[in-house]
Length: 282
Ligand SMILES: Cc1cc2nc3c(=O)[nH]c(=O)nc-3n(C[C@H](O)[C@H](O)[C@H](O)COP(=O)(O)OP(=O)(O)OC[C@H]3O[C@@H](n4cnc5c(N)ncnc54)[C@H](O)[C@@H]3O)c2cc1C
Ligand code: FES
Image (cartoon, rainbow, N blue to C red; front, side, top):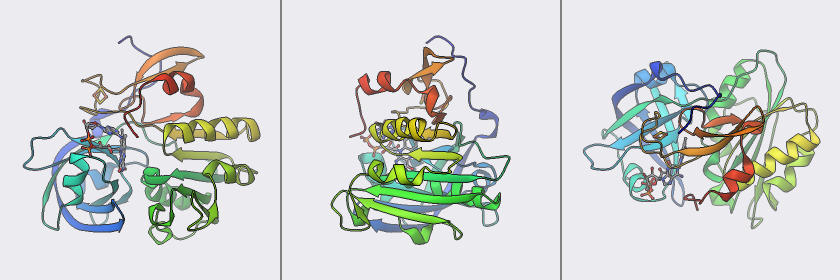
């Protein structure tokens, strides 16, 4: 793979620690919130960064998950998981006291504002994962933060009670209308973009592309950042399994989701290239 011009993540803060599960809460069908005692990660993890988790003992490769909640005082971190295959099934079955191998923080996270403004957080399904931590950091900086969450049905929405207090507004959208407004998240987006300085989005790639296009059309002055997914073996740039098509100064370049991402400015993503890439995330 040729080198890209985009900056890579700083691996010097990553640690390999054996964390301990202290809570495992079911939040809906196939959805879990795992809270781990992991003092080193809790000290370091920034919004949008991820950890590679592995149940121990276990033969599986580690799996990548965004830090969802981070409490440096208690030395805990939490992860919002959707059961997908064997690795997430094993993590979802953990009980308090179980050890979990945690490598992190990894990747490049969301950029945090230097000047107060207005942020919109856009979460599709389990893409809500990185936002409790991000919302907490934005609110602590005096940012006005609004929340837009879309999911297939009510039981797949992220619980509002798990977001930090102080949001300036929230809107939930479901495909089947079982909670909030019926429709697609992107149907509701246009009305929330007015006056926004920053849009942070995480969810399926087609949703991210739609958010990026709509934001650049209706609110071109806003910073738009997206958190992408790719299949990850190592999480730190060695296996080359997480290749994604990027743009650097308008030129297509191959990138690594684990080093240049997972969070990228929307205009750094080659969306058409990404759309043509075979999807492993259905
Ligand atoms: C940066 C990043 C952050 C993520 N954060 C979250 C999160 O907070 N919550 C959450 O529920 N999910 C998250 N995911 C997706 C999660 O990593 C996958 O669902 C998980 O790896 C699937 O593993 P599995 O063993 O259950 O599935 P399997 O199908 O058994 O996995 C098989 C292989 O495919 C890879 N793989 C499969 N799906 C994905 C995927 N979506 N992303 C990356 N690799 C995949 C696995 O690493 C594994 O090597 C994130 C992915 C990335 C890249
Ligand atoms: S996950 Fe191995 S290089 Fe990115």
